[in-house]
Length: 385
Image (cartoon, rainbow, N blue to C red; front, side, top):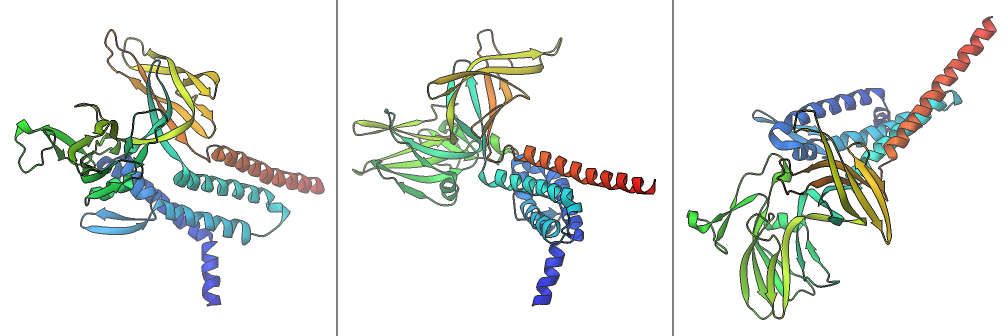
C-alpha cells in the first residue's frame, strides 16, 4: 500500500502529468469551441469547461473525457506537490517558488469565479435607474403583493426545472393561496386558440407551444401553466410567459381585498448601490451607421451620496466587488422620438483582482529568478577575470 501511494504521489507531482493535463486542456478548448456552432456558448462552456467530466459524441460513439474543472483541479494539486513539496528547497529557487505561488493564485481565482460569482446585465433608458441586475440565462417565479415594504417570494430555477418533469405544488408561508405549476417549458411561444392548435391545452385563450431550445440560451423565453388555489377553495387557471409582448409579464391575482402578482422573469441579483443612466452617447464610423464607440454617463448612489461616472467600452465601473461594463445599446434603428437605452454587463466576482495580483507575483518571481542567474553569472565572470 505504501508503495502504491508513493507511486501515486510521484505521478501527481510529475512533469509528465503536466504535459498530459495541458494536452487535455488544448483538446477541450478545441472541441468545446467547435461545439458552440451547434450548442451555443453557454451550453458548450457548461458541458466542456465547467464540468467534472464530459461524454463527447463522435458519430455513434460517446467518448468519456475529463471536464475542464477536473483538469484544473488536478493541475492545481500537481503544482502544489511538484512545485512546492517535492522541489528542492534552496534559496537559488526562490524565484521559482514565487512564480508557482502566482500560478496557484491564478488557478484559485478561476475556481472562485466559477463557484462564487454572479453575472448578468442591466438595461436602462436615459433617466431610469436600477439597484439590481438580471441573469442572462436563469429564470425565477416571483410572487409579491404590490405594497410598500412587501416581501417578495422567489421560486428558483431548480423548482422550475422540476416542474418541467411533473406538477409542483407551492404552499408559501404568508401567501393566502397555493400555486401549482402544472407544466413548464424552457422555450415556448403562445398561440391564440383561433389558430386551431391540435392537442394543446388552452388557457385564457392561448396555448403555450414548446419549441426547441435556442442555440444561445439567453434567447429562450420560458412559460408555464399555473393553477392558483385560494385558501377558501376557489381556483383560477392562468399562464405566465417570460415576455411582455402579449400582455404585462407580471400577472395580477385578486385575492379577497388584495391584489398579488406572479411574474416569470430572469433571476435578479441585488446591487449594493443604485445606478441611473443620465446620458448615452455614441460615435459612428464616417459614412456608416455602425457605432465606432459608445459610452454612458451614470450617477451611482450609495446611501445619500451621489457620484457621477463615465463608463466606456474599456473603462468599467469597479466598486464593492462589482464590475459594470458598457456592453451594448439600443435601439439600433431609432425613430425621431426614440430614447436610447444602454446595456451594462455586470459581474460580481470575489476574485476580480486576483488575476492581476497573480501576474504581478509571476512577474516578480521571474525578475528574482533571472536576477539571481544574472548575479551568479557576473560573479563567475569576475572570478575568471
